[in-house]
Amino acid sequence: MSMNLLHLIFAIALCCTNNNAAAFSHQKAFSNFGTSLLSHTNVLGGATPPQTDYNVTREDLEVLDNELKHCGGEIIDAHLHTAPWFNNGEELAAGLAENSISIGLLYDPYPKQVNLPYDVNTKVHSIASSSNGKIFCLASLNTTHDNWEEHRQTELDRLRSFLSKKDGCVLGVKLAPPHTCLPLTSNIIGDIVEHLHCHDGNNKVIAIHIGTTPFCGPLGKQFGLKCLCGDEYVNPRHLERYISNYPDITFALLHS
Image (cartoon, rainbow, N blue to C red; front, side, top):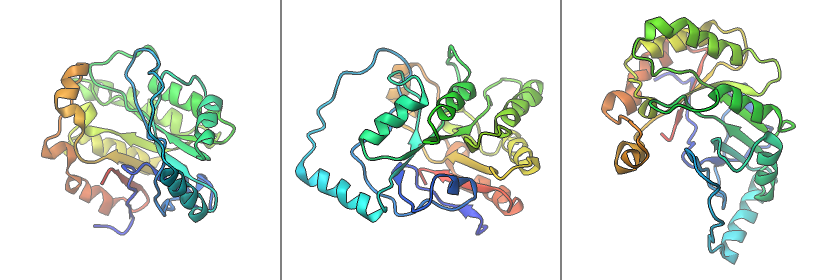
């Protein structure tokens, strides 16, 4: 497998670096993964959840304090999703700052069988661009169409329009194959990779959810979601040829 493969363990969700988050767009790995008392959350809808007692102990606070010292005072949350309890980047950045997190990376896929009242990329970018440089984001596209060829150009243009933003907020592309029923063996993957290869910018990063998701089980049925976790949706071996053939692209395998 190519040495250009960038392994980012986003399952831990938090990391620290002495550089700022722009290092991600220059294909430098976030390192020294740490632990936080603030976990990422994604809610499909409904009211703001009630306040939760996390039973934070003195030992928990000591762990956080040690991580802050280890990270030079900067913790980056590399796994954020949109949620109903913040409306803009300033609110999200303020919430992160209260938990000693200085920079965040926000992304959402275009879900299958869920009609959202907003465009995913537009919402994610609006939050990042209103954060005073504290929140960065990844763009996506809708790969759930029954006839991809019919929608191919429209979706690639959608992706291009956000990758080409000049404000520096968009650091690359996000895909979630199990959640969007997108096989890693699909020609759609090849179309996206080739599009990114031809993109004129330094944000040639593609972050792909690897592995299964709880939504493939009873939790998905509870929310009325269709997710697929067979081998062709979760096994990174299916990406090996792209990683080998496109050394100019950084592949980040999320949760691997």
